[in-house]
Image (cartoon, rainbow, N blue to C red; front, side, top):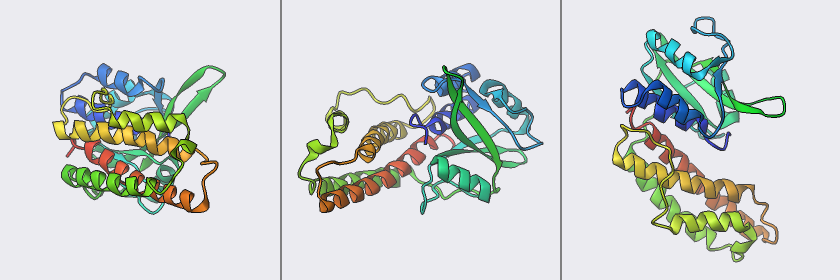
Length: 256
């Protein structure tokens, strides 16, 4: 998964553009701000652009084809959150742990991002389109996602409490946990205009928790016992599932 979660930015700002709450340049600029230039390559003959088309040109080219909405998918093995098929889209999205479903007049297309490196200095994001089943993913209502996130925080806190040596996680995790307790910390810049206030709050909380999950998951946990490692793995699993559902609910709120 791209750590900047490119799919979430494209969904939030793409829907804001479609609703007339942001210009196309603003939407593309926000999507590319932390990741470098985005391009879309295509293996589908009926999409109106060629491989390597810049994101702005690709989005403008899709508008006459009934471009209606963007929806976030954050799947993991055993939990294909937001996916509807087909098989190749599902496989690629599970590998990337993120994707975007795009609604066109003729049906859906799935876009899967990956890091685009060229030479020694160019870094961006390349999106590959795949055919998607013309079906609606299971909705994740904002109230349910918010309740689930708060429940998961309590459950994971109890499990984290069984890990005696929290300092073994390293300073980055400690700082990320401190950020969660800082009520004055500025919200993450995820959501675009047009999302309900509840979605803004939920996205900010979920985005900060996602940092904790990522950093703790990357840490090897040296010095922890087998029982402590199991408690930490279960806490991260519980928290990750709730964070992904909260992000899907918040970032898709404008489309819903």
